[in-house]
Amino acid sequence: MRRFVVVTCLLLATAAAHALDIAVQIEGLDGEQEANVRAFLSLEQEKTRKGLTEGRLRLLHREAPTEIRRALQPFGHFKPKVESRLEQHESGFQALYQIQPGPRIKLAKVEFNVTGPGRGDTLFAMGLDLHENDFLDQTRYKVLKQQLLSDAIEAGYLDASYSIHEVRVDLDRYQAKIRLELESGPRYRFDEVRFVQDILNPEFLARYLRFGPGDPFSHEQLLTLQSNLIDSEYFSHVEVRTLRDEAVDDRVPTEVVLTPNKPNRYRIGLGFTTDTGPRVTLDWKRRLLGRNGHRMLSELRLSAPHSSLKTEYTIPLERPSRDSLSFSAQGDRFDTDARRGERLLLNSARSVGLENHWRRTIGIDYSYEDFEVGAQDDNALLLVPYVSWSQLRSDGLYYIQRGHRINLRFEGAAEQLLSSTSYLQVHTHNKLIRGLSDGNWRILTRMELGATLTQNLLGLPASKRFFAGGDNSVRGFGWEEIGPQDSTGAVIGGRFLAVGSIELERLLAEKWSAAVFADAGNAFDPDYAADIEYSIGFGVRWHSPVGPIRVDLASALSQDEPSVRLHIVIGPEL
Figure 1 (cartoon, rainbow, N blue to C red):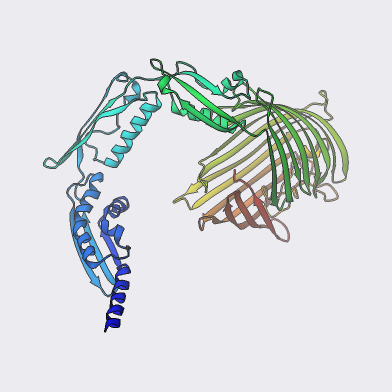
Figure 2 (cartoon, rainbow, N blue to C red):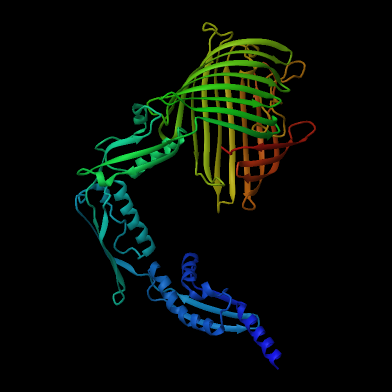
């Protein structure tokens, strides 16, 4: 008998430990309102809890109508009708709530006042952006109220606070009133900025300041300063301190504590594309040379068709986070199906940041190139001044929904100025990404155009001719595989280029997507025949931590015998 009692107790305890099977059904509400109701419902929160008893379930069900009414008040529904029912089936319990939200309450009056020194500031002229006869939306009210306070603090009213903030609801008249009063306090201004460090000249560090004593205090300015100093790589840690306790009248001093970074950075990288095959990159960066922010970078890239060695010396200018002067020396070796040779290049360039994320670079190249293209074995010496503009914009999302890259370059050389030939050239390479519908679909387009004005194609070295085909050109063809051909059938490049691509991509899972695409274009030259080549294909993408890995199969439909080519690319989308 004792054993029977023990077993029975164990079975009862085991049954009690398991959660009841409960379904909560809500009818009559839209998505946002239903989500808020579920967040308020205690039954929804406890339905999967182990040990929930039937008695507790029925208690929570009785409390649900009151919780539903509270959940609908932020949306302006103060007189909802709630019908509730709890049913027990063989499979478990079902709690059903049929809700008629009722009319939304409207604002009869919105009163907003500012007291203190900021009373006449135009910053507060718009108030809350809530008006009479608007529906009461307490969530929006709270967001606007917090945004207004944040804007006040950002503008230098560091002591700003609400002395009155109330929403009054009159259920008899079924209307609401908002009364809000902001005590601004004094508007603070910047005083001196003290840098605590011993590796850079104070005069150089002062160039990072985009504000001065007497300017309105701004947290955004301080965050920008901190970000720019971190991005400089001179420092491993940047701490910005606002010294409110040392403020004199409305002037607030600032202290920036800077921890030096390691002087050298060494990095090795491995990559692969079907254009270049395996690729190894080694670089050494000297983060700081001297006390005026100079730095140096040496980089070695090794792959079968193209290897290079480059050393660059950079001098920050008046705006060190945006503008620089650089000097570099570079050696390249090319060995592709279309061309072979070596090039030595010296460069000097001045790069400045413009508005709206644009960057302009003005520079000059001096190069010697020894090259073989088709049956031509030649060399060229060029002094090439150039100017380029670039812009890179992205929403920063893991799966970019809105972004683009624009590159435009003009360059030229003249025989009268230390060059073996004369030419003028313009080249642009652009890409656009746009998300569609719910963010799972994207359209990606790419366009590359180039034009060269010169007397004779053969006077141009291989590096200044246009070729087409490859992973980022017309897929379905090898790298630089298509373009004008000489009498032997060898691709020799052209003076013009036109390549375009359109791609439709669908997100399949968190890190996987699939795409279909069509590419078209070629390199052209008036002295040689060349047709537009085109291809179609499909591919998969894995959005890895180091950037998307794209695997494509492309068919070159414009060939007499269409073929399929595999393309693999690892790298950023923009």
